[in-house]
Image (cartoon, helix red, strand yellow):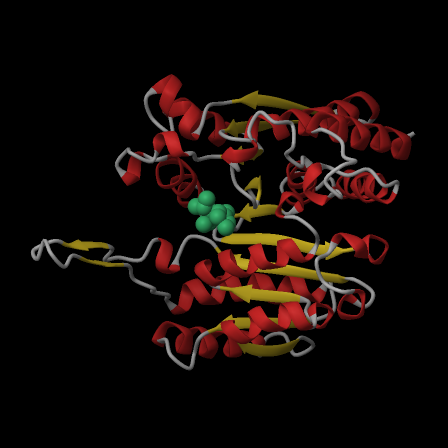
Length: 365
Ligand code: IPM
Ligand code: MN
């Protein structure tokens, strides 16, 4: 009998539904050719859920996610919902609560540039050397995103002030640092911890706790970097990096920077996991409303997010690797979407998805 799984599929807004169609093609190839059956349960989220159910995060969506083995997420957000109170908007009303509800404190973003695809990077060849393979490990449900108090003082209408709180506890830092060190054991055994300990109290604690956790991993080399310096070095010498360990905000910023180093944010997948490796898998790039409906979106981040889902939540490592290889081989054959093209010769979102699905069938057979 086939192993069987159920994944909740939340296409959401903007380019989300378009790129999700391409992930479905990959699932079809897997279901038709391998000894596994992955069922999907598509559910409304974000702006689409506001329009169809009156709330960005409907109860039926939460229930469907709870019953699933993992969540494949598209993206949420768009101008048309920006007039709503912030906690009713797609990001703060759906994505952040989802991360919080399932305790998805680990966010993993693999940033790999294959040497054969050097030309995709905006960096020059001599900087890229033989490509790079960086794993961004971002704390996802703490820090300034969720820290309290958060709000506004409006008593002086002519000079309102607004504030957020960057706060981390020993336990929060320990658990994410542990994950980063463990992941580095399967790699080059180097962790770069990012902070701003020359200014911020929360960073001083971050550095102390990460240093303490590192004592349990004597084989792993730990480096501390200030975030401004890290932002610079990612551009001047990306191949020196291995695992980078970041707070929520610093990880948000540096992972976008890393994404563009590989050519386009449209290629960066992300895995958000809890301690049981239940997870939500989503492109890092967001809903890109300006690309919606134009068939220009790159489906690779969504397809690689599916690959991460298979790897981390379903433990189907080999199939996950097939998908990754299908993406790399399709790029090596020269196929490009608009974002990574010369602006003239490129495939539409669905043509690219079809090419990757075909390449995957060839690999499997
Ligand atoms: C990301 C996104 C989100 C974040 C937004 C959409 C809330 O930018 O996943 O990186 O800031 O975490
Ligand atoms: Mn981001």
